[in-house]
Image (cartoon, rainbow over all chains, first blue to last red; front, side):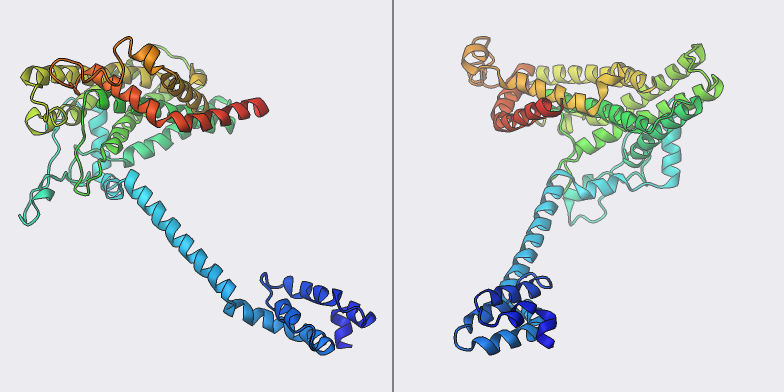
Length: 342
Length: 86
């Protein structure tokens, strides 16, 4: 009775011993992936054929469970999995730490409410803002002199770049475009992805433009104490600040100019022009410390080892950098902002 | 104008530009116009690493060195993708 319920084939045909263990072995395989029982059955197959087969079936289930944990093969597999996981995590962590400076990222997201409000105000009305230089942390303890030149986080310094405002305005810009399209009645879910693609590629182009200029003009950003150069994060941050002016333009235009028709009249143009000029001034003033470092401190850091590069080269370099600063802040920003407000 | 700025199109643009740099022949083209990777040492006053031209030469040779093998794989993938789904 007992055997017949579980495996009919051996009950019906006792003389056929050879296929029996294979049938038996399929039953525990359904429950546990590495079944140790068929191994032991086949090992003791020839001496005691009848007993081993019949008793191996009902007792095979608990054996399969207990043996799975204590099986050396399974142990090896678990060990290998653990090793692989740990190695993968270590590798990912190393890669992340190598390309993305996590402390610098946290530093850039260290914002407060008053900082965000003041920064927005500064970007929209930069005409009266007076000190534009970033503040450095005073080294109270002289035990570690290398930490003396560390910049204050955005929470404590209004002129410090942050990544919170760019991230939020980036998302807001995409959503605002969708909302404006919805007001006009032309909304489609695909609009979100299209807007994201357009905006992200514009940002990417601007970032590559800036990075290439930094390469050609041999501008190197401040190096953090951990040795990683987080200049590109700040470049991204400064690329994202123009969304505030763009959002302001879009909002005012759609509110005042009537949302039914995208009428790009003189009002919209003047608002756009104002935002563009304010943004340009903000860029010139705040990118100055990054693109035009003082020639005494880090200006000719790249060319310093060559004695042939003298004062003339330094002056020419500085002139080129100033030209690039204005070109980026006004000409390139005009192009990008015009694209994004379309 | 806006359709020019998709992420996919941008990807194609970058691949084509990188290909354009990678196919420049060192012997037949770059060395003739003085942009070969060995041209920097010939200049008067030693290698002037701060000049625009030196940076450009350095960039071209770097792209040609680093991107040659990855470009083969990327180009193959793009060609297969375009053949099947394009």
